[in-house]
Image (tube, rainbow, N blue to C red; front, top):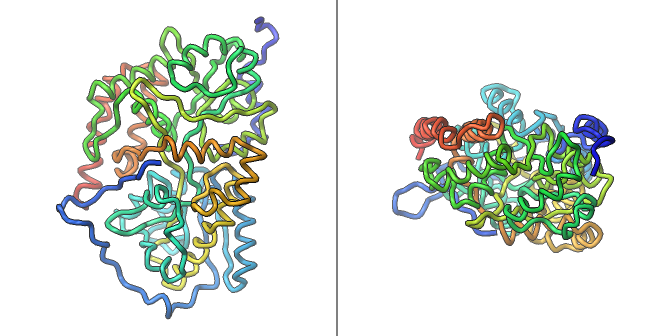
Length: 453
């Protein structure tokens, strides 16, 4: 295939940028106190919710995951129609989970705290350790919120010390996206690769389907992202970031995971390229495949001018799996009972069967209630847009709890990203990269977690 007239990465990405916008199960285990006894619910100031009158106004801080601001505005409109005595103000508190978290931390000692806040997979536990959020169990019981209907693995992600500190909202797993037109032109079957070895084999045929200055697979790096999708790859080599609280990056299996990553971008048969925004590059045809959040699905489908395929993440020689992820919503502890009750009512509404189905239909995030997964509304979506079904099936078939060091140790996600970027951006030797960050992870645990356990 001649590349004389082939568009460049920059040109194709520019065409799609405006369209894409801000794109961005086995039982889960959470840490317990090592006393040898069953965990008891954490001591909290009991509130008799039956005596509390909900506040008339509350504020919700969100980054609108999956470009969902219009969807969130519609959900607020629906809530206010059912509860005309409660007004909800939606605030764009950051462009991503980290920015929202940083703003929330800065506001913790001020009067600027929201009544409901985005609490991502790598931030909610820090909020709890800092005593910034309240447990939801009692207020949900008062509201008859039917917490048992939450998808157990998703609600269980927020359980610590016998209580739940957030509720699932925009929950996702990484998903393998592929360009069906480029797949067909390369003579490949209409499915995702079952293994990374198969993707390596297919990459030779796909190389002629992308611009000369690109590669078949585009991946983005950065905090709250790189260390998420890379879990699949390190697991695929039999490694992991940690064994519970113990960092395990010095094991041969973890080094093998780093070597796989290095070869992916810098090896003799490298077929991956760094994308500033992998969803944009994929939707514009700059790359033939990417790993993206399920929450990006609706935006990618809307932006792409080709048929989009979705598949499970590939396996490595030792298996793999896909990490759970995304965000929940939490209620600040410092707010008054009146504000907390109003926020809990809104949280209950946001996550009920109809609303989680609506949010899923319009973003690609997974329904967080079991009653919604197989509801008539979602069945209609699966029938018309089968790509939505992939994420739900992958959750049941391949989902795996994330390694503790990433999600429970404050700052660990950024440190892991630092090591991954040494390998991806600079081609650093994996053993050297892991050795440079392991002491930082150990220090973060000793200083920020161990004293509280």
